[in-house]
Amino acid sequence: MIDHTGINVTDLARSKHFYASVLATLGYTPHLELKDAIGFGDGDQRAGKDPGGDFWISLGDPFVPRSHIAFRARNAAEVAAFHAAALAAGGRDNGAPGPRPHYHPGYYAAFVFDPDGYNIEAVCHSGA
Image (cartoon, rainbow, N blue to C red; front, top):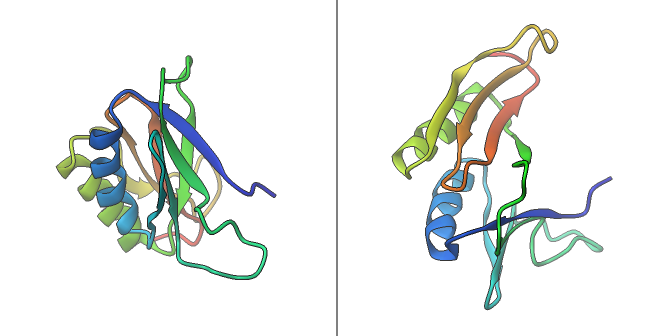
């Protein structure tokens, strides 16, 4: 349903480094760099898909309140890699990798605050 989405960040270079490190664990890379924005995508080049990517960071005032963004992981190993990469890149822990059965059986996720305070998540729905 959603073609692409994005957030505003205060330091584009810092956020590019953070998201390039973190999203690489899920198969995403920078696809298009503009003066004040960077689009990340998963490499899927199907006809009709935005070649610029489906997640964007743009230089600007961060949203208030901060958005929550959940990125799809294929399995628990990707969730753990996402969490570790985020912490190594300067993110702050907001929930270690693990099951979250209060959402639904099989919900496995990790949560981190990015450099601007957005709560980002990696989640798979097939459990550990």
